[in-house]
Amino acid sequence: MALVLRYPICLFTLIVIFSLSNDNLCFSKAQSDWSPAGATWYGPPTGAGSDGGACGYQDAVEQAPFSSLVSAGGPSLFNSGNGCGACYQVKCMINVNGACSENPVRVVITDECPGCVSESVHFDLSGTAFGAMAASGQANQLRNAGVLQIQYRRVECDYSGTNVVFVVDSGSNPYYFAVLIKFVEGDGNLAAVDLQQTSQSNTWLPMQHSWGAVWKLNSGSALTAPFSLRLTAAVSGETIVANNVIPAGWQAGKPVTVVITDECPGCDSVHFDLSGTAFGAMAAPGKADQLRNAGTLQIQYTRVKCNYPGVAVAFHVDSGSNPYYFATVVEFDDGEGGLSTVELQQNGQDNWLTMQRLWGANWKLNSGSPLAAPFSLRLTSGESRKTVLASKVIPAGWQPGKTYRSHVNFHS
Figure 1 (tube, rainbow, N blue to C red):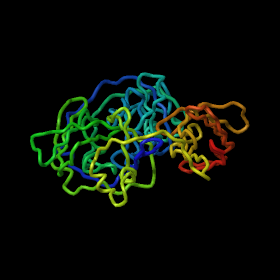
Figure 2 (spheres, rainbow, N blue to C red):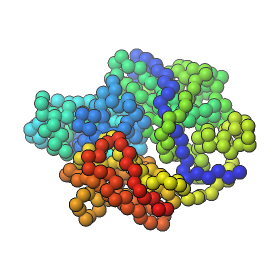
Figure 3 (cartoon, helix red, strand yellow):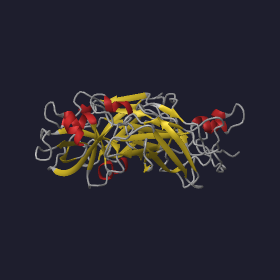
Figure 4 (cartoon, rainbow, N blue to C red):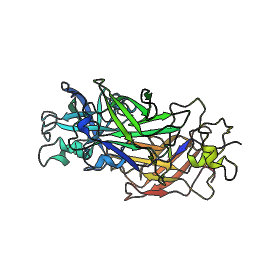
């Protein structure tokens, strides 16, 4: 039987949470000298940046202990996700901007800024964190600067009173276990995570870094819980063990309704890491569970066109968008499914501004001046280079977090 998919797809949700006291998880405290860096900000002026960011922390970025004091990191800070969870102090000096307080603010890397390459080190701070560098009453004035030269240094993470949290990925099953790890003190980010099954007390299985702060283990046989997890700090190399932190009978929970394009970096050159629903759909009637119990299969596949009859392309505006920064997820594009370019045209202008691919199906545009809506969006397909124009699809008065539907698609 052949399974036909545009891309490997999975559903992700934060359902099952296990924790261990940080009193038992204290890595050595790291601190360095001050160095120069560039800084910008994104998202709402008093918000936490984008929708949780590329580290996978989701709504936790807005809540204690992160408390919106977070930052997207340029390539050197994000480090392909290996920098997730690292803590830094940032400050700006009065001789750079008169609204600066010169007081240090601690931020956590929770997101990626792939286009932040004008300096070797760049912090794309949340609006809250950027404003926190200002003198009393000067936060809005400082944010109006948009871009600053700042000082930064690496510091230890300190989440006193908060447990380390392990969030089980909803795609986990008896043969595959993935977990998001957050609120690690000390170094904050990890170099390695190992898993020990209750039946194999002398064997530690190395997990793979999947993406962001998520680590995974693909097993050729069913894993036996409870699991202990061993964490290795990225800077000091120290290790700590969370004994039996994932109990017997753990559950991955039901997926949420949002569908995302996912990556399987540890898979073969052609490999589909299917959702349980898709895997079970290949089975004969009544045999879905039996097929899923196989864990791993050799399958046949072929590439086909995407076809969403009666559905036009939709644009979901990222919640971090503001008058100077616009980001959108492009959904339900027919035909090839993938896009090579997305361009934006402002109201009353003839020129098209090229947007950057942010991640997945999310495209962004950073502007040095306020963008004038309504916006038209021009999409170019990945292989055939066909284009469609969604004229004035983003209206004047658009709002972050809303979805705007066009009247076009590649089969229109």
